[in-house]
Every structure is written in structure tokens, then in C-alpha cells.
Amino acid sequence: MQLENFERLEEKIRQAVELIDRLRQENQEITSSYRKLEDQINNFEKGTESLNLETEKLRSELAHKERDFIEKREEIKRRLEKLLEKLVPFEAES
Image (cartoon, rainbow, N blue to C red; front, top):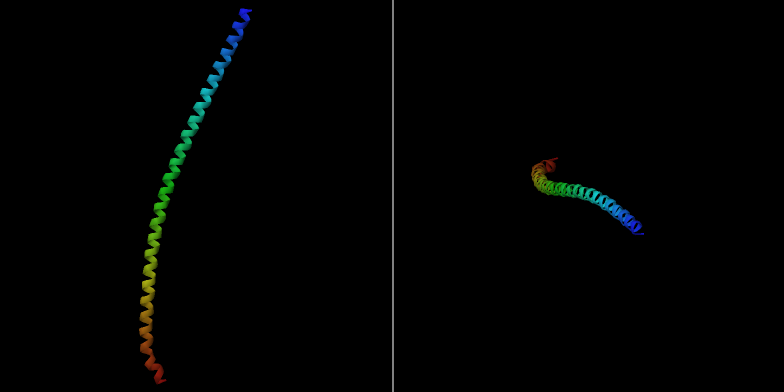
């Protein structure tokens, strides 16, 4: 009877050791996957930061070009108005 108890205990210990080994392996796999995902997140965050900086730079450039365009358009408008004013006397003569 004691031999049977000892054999059952031995079998339970063997199963426990197998379970511990499997759990250790799974833990290593999960840890490895976690680290890879963490690296990917860090890379995405760096990429996002870089894109945000580029977006801000482009917005600034666009605003600058828009101001330049408006200034040039106003300058052209003023010059055209002056030219048209010079043509008005010729219109009156016709």
C-alpha cells in the first residue's frame, strides 16, 4: 500500500515538473513576444513623433507661403489698379 502511495506521489511530482517546465517555456515565449511588441510600440512612437515634427514644419512652410502669396497678390492688384488709372484718361478721349 505504501508503495502505491509512493508511486502516485512520484507520478504527481513528475506531472508537476512537466507542468513547471511547460509554464517556464510559455513564460519565456510571452516575455519574448512582449519585448518585441514593446520595441514595435517604441518604434511607432518615434515614427509618430517624427511625423508630427514634419507636419508642423510643413504647416509652418504652408502658412509662410500663403502669406507670401497674399502679399504678392495684393501687390499685383495695386499695380494693376495704378495701370488702369493711367488708362482712364485715354478712355475719356475716345
